Length: 114
Image (cartoon, rainbow, N blue to C red; front, side):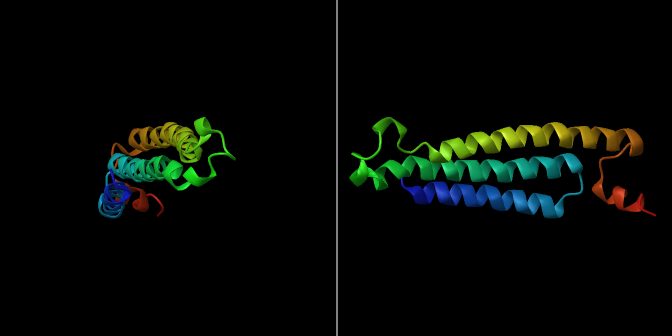
């Protein structure tokens, strides 16, 4: 499958995430859109990692054939670890916000400043 399909899908998912973050008021939906943007980046990293062995085929004598193309997948692993930590902290903040205000509307938090 050509890399352009992966790029188009990743760009589409990222744009959907951006639109969701900028237009929604529900904190849980905003949180899910941020996760969608992270997954779009992960998809692109894995796709580029998959295509790396084709580009590095001329230098196979210098590198072990089993380790070719895993750099992007290692980055994805670390992004997933950070995303898991983000989910735990973010959901705790959303739950505390709901307990105090009985709403997950982000605009309601602006009124709490006054």
